[in-house]
Image (cartoon, rainbow, N blue to C red; front, side):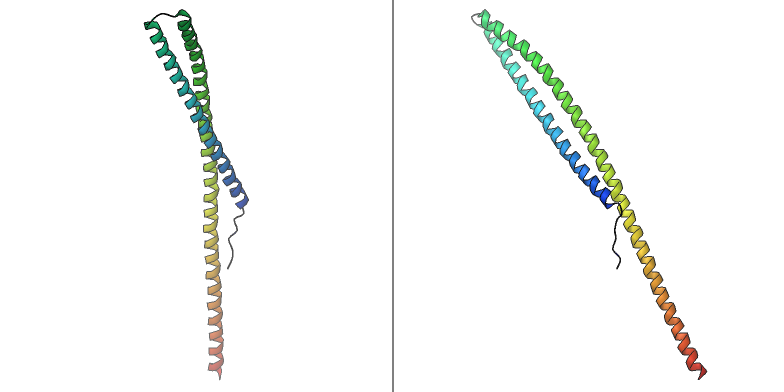
Length: 156
């Protein structure tokens, strides 16, 4: 029996590898986004802590140096939070770009898989046609052989 050989198998294998690489890149981008969001949440928590300390320091005996220090810390936190917010946005854009590349790689792989399926269907059809032709040839040969032997015996 004939063996099916897909002539674009090397291309399909490359598409599988590219998809795998894009999955890895997507996972790394997702991990990076989670890390940046975690840092952002930590900064917000620290800012809330400073805000609570500042409020508490303003209620009791006023220590101007401590209040000034907490106020400066709040300003620094605002800058850090803005910077981290930008980092989160960049990580989100990177994740979206990785998702787009992954979707494209998956679509390309699926295209080549469909081409392989169609080629296999064509192969099966050709194989069935070839078997049908061989059967017809065998039957035709047997019929000719029968006619020849029948003619031979009727002539005697």
